Image (cartoon, rainbow, N blue to C red; front, side):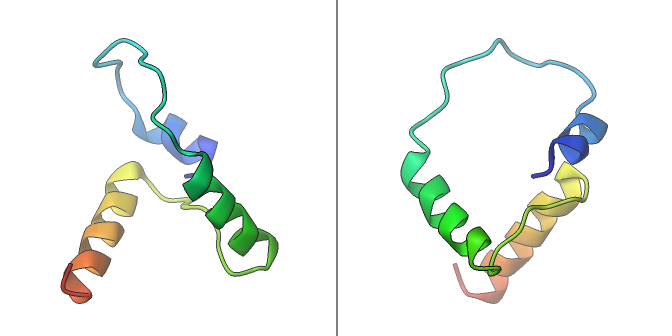
Length: 62
């Protein structure tokens, strides 16, 4: 997600900050694809991004 999309979508804090889950492996995969021009970042609202991911999972039978 683009930072600006998150800032425009978030209305209020609903919980305290927790440590991030382990994300390094997934980020490295994304970064490699991004650097190769095969990945990007969502620049739409969080709701639209979540809907896109849900639709993609349904379309692929996941």
